[in-house]
Length: 355
Image 1: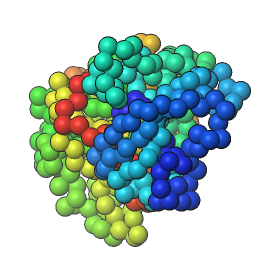
Image 2 (image 1 turned 135 degrees about the vertical axis):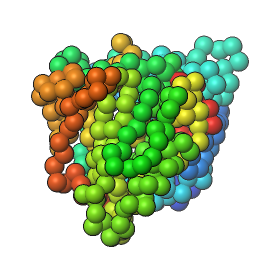
Image 3 (image 1 turned 180 degrees about the horizontal axis):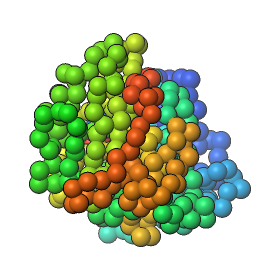
């Protein structure tokens, strides 16, 4: 959902750096300063940052994925309340374009050559993300030959990326069996798969669906077995999310993990399939072929490479044939996800997404 490298830094006040690992340009022999300043806005607040350049590596200083003089932004001050409480120290943009898209450049390019983004600068055409299930469990990002081989495995289903700017997909239907609500995407929606959004962001058209789930949910968490599996149709494939994906438990009480976001795209109202989606699907982002490849995952984040259903994966289903293979979920998938509000990550802020 984003493009820049934005880091909490020593330039920020005590509230930014207390109890956190922050970027300190004074400790880097390769840092190059800049006078450029930008303000970036998220759904939950904004941050003012100062530009600089430094060597950036994924996987350590000896990693083959290293870029010298990579642009980065040091947070000077922010009004993002969750960042005062959470443990994360930066937001790393993993957008698929080669260069910073028009309308996102900070400051405006004014005829200058746009800067390369992180993935193309490192020569990364394909990478995977999966999140383990459970409170404080880790997430995993991988790249290299193993990921490239996985994407070709029949246990994965591939969906075309239609976004020129974001990892955007077409969404045509959301079904919640047993709830008397209409399809929130009758003329189509756009969906962004985003590792930087804690919940599932939904448009106003989904309010009848989320209201029906909230009405049915008991706050003492005693009836998750009565809640529906969400079946989301993405460009000819159906992915499924059980209650554990969209119900969270905070301080002993259950809540839905939906957040409303009133944004439009050329494909219709925008959804963001955030961390709940990535806890149930091993997801490969493919810049070269402009596709996203999915396989259902274990709680420990291993892809399940069976051969049932479309693309060999029983969590996906062909549409248009009347019947499709539905995934059978385990009893623990009808338990709430233990959550910490302090770890909530902001969704991008935009009234209009140009995919």
